[in-house]
Length: 68
Image (tube, rainbow, N blue to C red; front, side):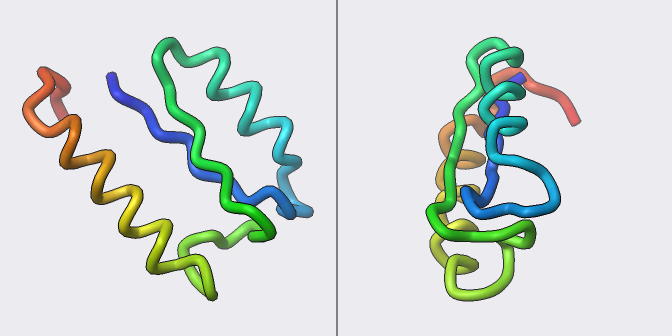
């Protein structure tokens, strides 16, 4: 299943190293580091870029055989 791990590099709740580890453990996963972002990368100054990148990822993988 295509997987995008999105994580802020300045997250104080969950260390960025956890996102890196998850991306390594999930075969074929992509990691989207959000430089300077904290725990809530989907809001704040990074929101539009994060949303754009997620939509791009979903568009690339739509119809790739994954089932919801």
